[in-house]
Amino acid sequence: MPKLFIPGPIDVSKETFAAMSQPMIGHRGSEFEALYASLQPGLKELAGTTRPVFLSTSSAWGVMEASLRNLGGKKVLNLCNGAFSDKWFDVSKKIGLDADKIQVEWGQTIDPEAVRAKLSEGGFDLVTLIHNETSTGVMADLEGIAKVVKSFPGVLLIVDSVSSFSAVPIEMDKLGIDVLLAGVQKALALPPGLTVFAVSEDAMARAKETPNRGYYFDFLEFAKNAEANNTPSTPAISLLFGLQQIMENIAAEGVSNRFARHASNNAMIHAWGEKHGFKNFAPEGNQSVSLTCFATPESLDLSAFIKTLKTKHGFVINGGYGKIKGTTFRISNMGNETTETMQELIDAMDDVLG
Ligand SMILES: *Cc1c(COP(=O)(O)O)cnc(C)c1O
View 1: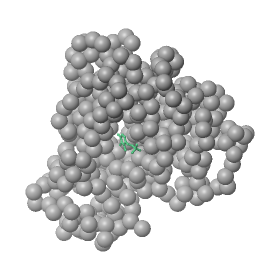
View 2: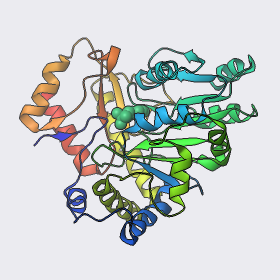
View 3: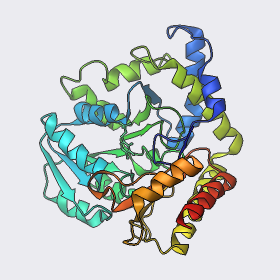
């Protein structure tokens, strides 16, 4: 089977699959409560929060949309610089919110001062930010933007850390992030279908006042059930077994070692690109450390490169996303990769490039 180095879903280990194939348990019993509780300390550490971390059986978009439905009040500001952040603006409008955006070119980053200028126009009570724009490999100035948003009382900040969660430190409480969410098929190296998220006290208070939250994604339902180490509806229990195995791995490795491993694996791909004269699509200082997005040079037959890498070596990289498909390509270094496995990929890519 080919091995995935695309920026999600990524390669899942045999150990994770083995953990997922444990016998089923009922979700309204003490075994499930123990499973749920066992996940909390590690997830809280990764999120930098003392708040409970909720488990949603959905892909990340479920919680991205739910955050808007639970917290959308007067007017939302969507910060847009790539496929996922642009789509978040569309989703805001689709559910009928009054939405405005700051739009910059794909591959660029959003200046905190632009956020300050926009919020100064007044009327906003919610901001969405993608921490790591997986489509372009741009990592946002999370700290700078959070600081600006927090200087506007009553404005809540939702942060998508789907492709950065567990790859870099994130300080939800310190930065005043109101919702932090991540799908598990990216850096956590699980099969897709589960999203972890935490909600601040301010955001819970806002949700309480928001009508028509529905049931499946109601933050208040998640909070009420979390008190009993449970979820509102039957969760993807097999994925939670897998997550438990991943969290044990992370605890054994240590989070700072994990962050350092992602940084050094990422640096290997940067060095490889430099050697071949490939230009990073993201600007210096805002480059993701969980994936790398390169601009495709004229001289490279990208589809032949990707195809041969797969057929000859069994490695899959991604040929660009959305409107930059073909003109960029992306390589993930998320999850369980090591210096050795990254080197295998690099050797294979060098072989194909000749
Ligand atoms: C993958 C990704 C998503 C979408 O996740 P789904 O699991 O497909 O809903 C959202 N945001 C970012 C930054 C992503 O990388």
